[in-house]
Picture 1: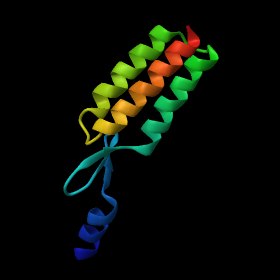
Picture 2 (picture 1 turned 135 degrees about the vertical axis):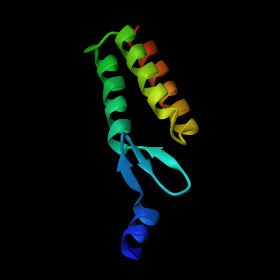
Picture 3 (picture 1 turned 90 degrees about the vertical axis):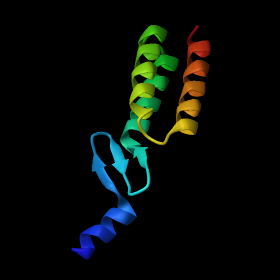
Picture 4 (picture 1 turned 180 degrees about the horizontal axis):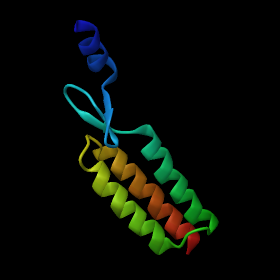
Length: 87
């Protein structure tokens, strides 16, 4: 079915937390939104910096299986800034 393969090439397949394409894999957008929300919770004092650090480690491990080097660095920078702000 050429229609199904055309959709796969354009949009990729959403599976187990990633968007799989023919040449690469990316982290889902909702996963990125969720970790940013967690960072904001630390800034507002709803979670501790230790809880944030655990969440960041977990998310970084998950994102490490995708093509996400720059995204991981950006999230780590945001988290460090939130920890400084919360301290």
